[in-house]
Image 1: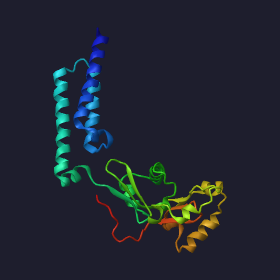
Image 2: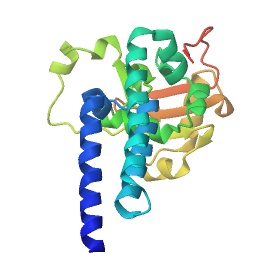
Image 3: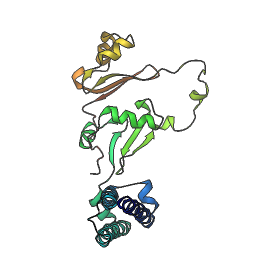
Image 4: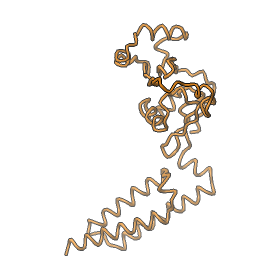
Length: 235
């Protein structure tokens, strides 16, 4: 008998959550923001407890689910009408790359590393950070990227590429001021070459936040001081 009760309660919890998701709409499923994430976690926890905890009465569960569902629905409507309230509640996108320069402080504010930034870029089929003009971290945690102007459409240079030549994968050489010795050794790049390149660019190792040898063989450098007078940060 207990097994049958748990089966019925579990099925009921599943149906209730399906109905709530239907009420909240497709936007909740495709582009979850802060309040929707909190709502989803709480509703899921309550439904799971209802399925296995026989001490929870049905009426109590329905009241709690109704409160959170109505609250989330009301917030969604308020966000549509009052943009300032939405920005205050959910925050705004953060610029991570501006004008081809990595904004290290904005990375730290969002607890992001260069590894996670590169991972998200690769998911957008960008394997060379030198191609990026702007990159924004949206409030849902996804990355929006704008390529440099000359790379946004097919150019004559692209058409003249020799398909028989293999494209070189970008090689990270410096992260956060530290030389990646393993990458140098595995790709047969002398450390003296790297230091000479830094010198030719009029900078030093301690000034470099990130350096990568791009697929065209050029060295991309990003210094701690990006020489941007007013970095964009909407937060």
